Image 1 (cartoon, rainbow, N blue to C red):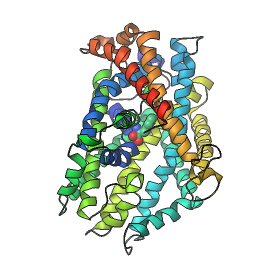
Image 2 (image 1 turned 90 degrees about the vertical axis):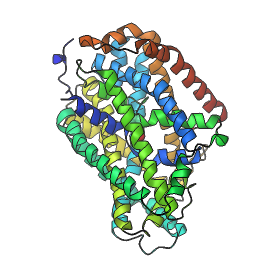
Image 3 (image 1 turned 120 degrees about the vertical axis):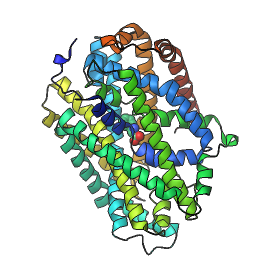
Image 4 (image 1 turned 135 degrees about the horizontal axis):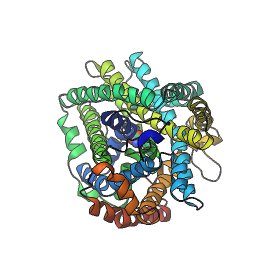
Length: 457
Ligand code: PHE
């Protein structure tokens, strides 16, 4: 029962764990994706639905994942197998390990872009350009060049591996405690700069004015998908981090801090992007290209534009790095637990597999070649991985976790784990209700709708 069972490593402090887990949650999903999804989906109206999903689905699932992880002290595959030996449930854990690994394989490509853009902006590449079409050309050339796409992914994986190889407390926790405060300070400075620009108010209005007219079923899919992705749920990430959590720790309040931290950063990220965009006369419907195309072409024109632009990409790099660390840790924990490998061997092998998987994603971004238009599916390799793993597998994973805790492993043993050391879980009845009924039904409804309509987030 005590923590002597953990030779795998443990977080050394509550704040260390919260920084690491919030570091996992806060990533490209918050700073790159959340602002444009919000912009496209009705501003504050979307934010409200999003927060609702964080509370009724995200938080209960996060508590479930952390509880399974801490109880078993295992990677997702080992965790399910330990709790239900012999059955099929271990496959749910296996799916989690696979999902985390494959998410990392495309995530690292975009993460690599953020480093590339940091240097591109500093080098003055955007300084002389006129308009979005020229920055679109720069992006097209940049993303079609394999030296950039593969090379920068390798660089990102190498940095991630160096941190992960050093272990849970001496690697992940130590660096999260450095990166996260830097990230928060940088973010606040950028928000301040952006909202004080002349003409920024229009951006604030676009971003936050509730627009209920555009709400549709797809808005709900977007909000749920974004909530799961942003909180690193459904792919084994939080389960793995939970496996290093001390049994004395108040797991529920930690989950609350992580979710609050994550949501706050996502909302603040929009306060950097939209005010600056509108102040410089940009088009908010930039979609995924918002950060790499629209933003650089406009930002560069403002006073101190190089500094402002480079800082945004530094922010993205830091946010992505604390996330790739957590994603790499999923297969690493699997190899360490299930194969008995050393952390070094596990990290090197996991990183190599991920790199091999990242190459087709990286190459699929160029304009030509079969990887950018897969036979039969008609979409690029990276889009395919995003849809299968960051969409369907993530949602299925979250569904399985709710069903597992609600019906298979059981609410009672889960609550026992949560309430160890006299940690009273005041909202346990609400949580039980959410995990047993609300989460499975809501997630299944959305999954069904996604499958029937071919819609995804
Ligand atoms: N939460 C991360 C982000 O927002 C992505 C992620 C998803 C990480 C699933 C781990 C597991 O960028």
